[in-house]
Image (cartoon, rainbow, N blue to C red; front, top):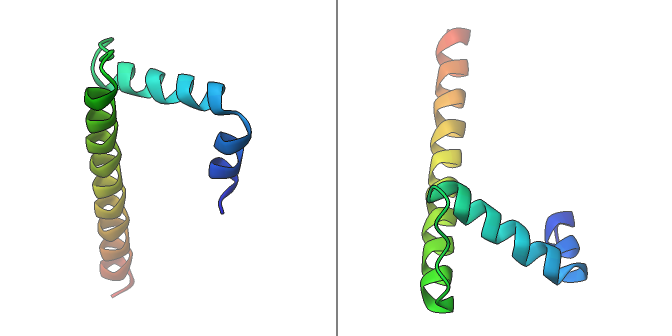
Length: 69
């Protein structure tokens, strides 16, 4: 279990607040009140950030390989 997950389990109110702020930042200040919409949007944002993280990692690795040739 990562330290971030452990912290979220120990501090559920702060964790919820941080997730809401992340969604507000991504959506330009909007945060849905409906829990289902909130869960859907947070899932989409999380998947998108994972995708970009993996792409960035892959691109960095490719550039390192190309530079070392």
